[in-house]
Amino acid sequence: MSFIDLNLNSSLIANVTALGYKNPTPIQAQAIPAIISGNDVLGIARTGSGKTASFALPVLNQLLNLATAVRTRQPKVLVLVPTRELAVQVADVFKELSHNIPHPIKSMAVYGGVAINPQMKAIYGVDILIATPGRLLDLQRSNAVDLSKVKTLVLDEADKMLNMGFQDEMNEIVKLLPKKRQSILFSATLSEQLSGINKVLLSDPVVIQIAEQVADVELINLSGYFVSDDRKGPLLRHLIREQGMKQVLVFTSSGNKAEKVAGKLYKNGIDALSIHGKKSQSARTNALRRFKSGDLQVLVATDLISRGIDINELPYVINYELPRSPKDFVHRVGRTGRAESKGMAITFVTRDETHHFKVILKKMKRYIDMVDSDTLDL
Ligand code: AMP
Image (cartoon, rainbow, N blue to C red):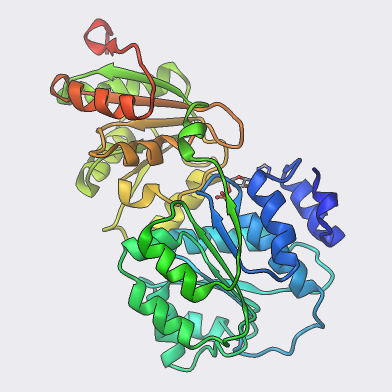
C-alpha cells in the first residue's frame, strides 16, 4: 500500500514524501481510512509506530475539506497528551504536515510550566489544539478557549495519561466537548482502567492493534559492559570517541546523576546536555530540539522523559545505569532501531547487578556476550 491509496489531499502526500516517508506504517494504513470515514478509533500502538501521522494526516485532510474558517477561540480538533514534550512533538508533526496546504490550518501546543499569557493570546484562530490536561483547563477557565465546537478528540498515550493521574481532568474536559464528535484514542497498552474509559468515550470504534514492542526490540543490536561505578564516566567517553558517536541518548536513574554525567562530558570536550524533571521547560525543549536536529551530540536523560521521546532513527542509546524494571529497559532501548533502521543499545552493568540484568534480558528473550571493561585501556 502507498500513501496515494489512502485518498489523502495531494498536498499532504507531497509533505509525507518530503519527510522521506515511503509507505504508510501498519498503524497508518489502518487508522487513516477509518478516521477519514468518520469512525471512532481505538489504536493500540506505541511511540515509534508512526501513530502521530496516523491521526495527524486524516485530521488535516478533514479540515482541508471544510471551508476556510473564521478565526475564533474554538478549535475544531483537540489532541490531549500526557506530557509537555509530547505536546511539542505532536505539534511539530502537525506543522511539518501542513506546509503549503491549500488553505492554512493553524496548530498549536499548550502545556504547563511556562507563562500562560502568551498562550492565551496565541490560541486565537487555532484549528488544532494540542494540550496537556491541566493547562487546557486553566485556559478554559480563563475563557481563552471554548471547547464547544470540537469535532474531533484525540487522546494520545491514554495509558500514560491515566498512570500520571489525569483521570479527573480528562473527565472534566470531556464534559466540555460536544456529545456528537469523533473520538480517537491511542495507547501503548490496553489496561482494565483504560477499557472503562474506552467504553465511555468511544462509540463502536474501529480497533487497531499493532504488534507488541518486544518484536521491535529484535531489531536492536544489544551489547553490555561490566564496569565499576567509578569507571563508567571514562568508559562512556571512550565509547563515544572510539565509535565516533554523533548522536547518543544516555540514560541515568536520577536527575542529579544526569546533570553530573552531562557536565563531565562537557568538561571533556563532548557536547552534552541533560534533560530531566527539574529542568525548566524551556531548557528541556531547547535541549530536545538541538538533539533531534543533530546539533547536540549527547543528551543525558532520566526514565521520566524516555517515554514519548521520538527521535527518528536514533543510532545509539547507552544505559549508564540500569533501570529497575524490564519495561523501562524496553522503553529506553526502544528509542533506537526504529522505522526499520538498526540501532545500537549499550548497557553498563556493575558486577552486583548481574542477576538483575539477566532477568531483564530473559524477559526480552535476548542474550548478550558481556565485555569486561577491565580489559580496556580507558
Ligand atoms: P511516532 O510513532 O508518531 O512517534 O513516529 C515515529 C517516527 O516514525 C517519527 O520520527 C516519524 O517521523 C517516523 N515516521 C512516521 N511515519 C512514517 C512512515 N510512514 N515512514 C517512515 N517513517 C515514518
